[in-house]
Length: 268
Length: 263
Image (cartoon, rainbow over all chains, first blue to last red; front, side, top):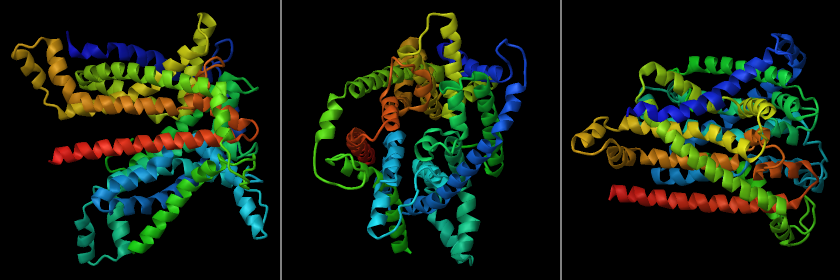
């Protein structure tokens, strides 16, 4: 028996449960209830342009903040003594092992109108401020939930950068800023690109964070899709069309990201 | 410079941990207040254990995670063996499709499976529930098993399987005695990864579960939609403790095996 036939059960599974469902999204996006071809739903997506713009904008901000916060964290981690690195990495990643609904719920508790932040501010005579149900709260939720996804790929490339690189740059007369932009950043590029994808993709498609921290006024693409399938506005054709457009947006962004990656491959 | 680094790390850790610690503290709070700690109680824990919905969805989550990860490990390991022996182009095609559930946003995977199940539900006797949930979990688990096992083949000498057969092993015995031990670390990490993903998944389960079969994350979601309930805080505390214990055990095991390798 040839070994390649071992994959037969999986190939059947893959076709039925990965390929066919994705083709069904495309099929539903371009057909109406009678099964006839239509671009009505795809063009209807245009009505929600503001939600698309908001989703892209908020998730770009969240991704940028994650990159700025995570970059020094990954660098510090990678320069620690070897035996400390493992433990420290575990401490940094530990909150990610909590279910993300609970992590987001924790921020609901903190940011609420009767929450602890407003309470503490009240003690010193400030507020109460409207913290929850704002777009800033949504960005905060994204940063909090997806920060570890940025730290991990950055750390794994920086860990491999040899210390002598910095010494060489120093010997050749680089200032520490020059070392950062001419040595560390180029060498950590694969980590940067995969970190950006790993934060941006879940951020742009979330519906939980916007629902729990954004109230009703900060709908994102994810909310829009969810409403077409499980909400009152049941309309799988429109939902499929929105999902289709979302996939195209992500594909375009990942292709752009790959241009920056020397290996031309996004690390997952 | 070193000091600055320490301060920075402490600030980031503060940001990461403070919400969790607030939840833990308020799980012992007497009243439902989210800001004032009025007195110590274990009431919310008692209520949690008496909450039938939570307990049954926890049991359901564990059953699904076990079944899904075992089935995916078998399916994925067999698949990896097969894919490894494919020609270049079919291999690339299969790997690209396999990567899709990992690259795609979870909501797209969830919605695509929901469309498929709706299609079947209308034509066959299929209802949303345990079966659809299990299929969905296996579907997003298998790619992780394949991605964990595949690299092990690249590290393995491809001729040892033939050598074992030349030395008188049947193909099956050669596989069991020679190939399987080589790829075992990948199989184990693939299994563990799919088990944790299954335990933790909300988005895909949300679209494929129906009303009869709920998992713990779905129950948590419906709890957060309703009024404030400190039972969630109690649940978070218990999950946090469980996570800490698992990670410490994992670390100890890894350190020990590393020391053994060094010795």
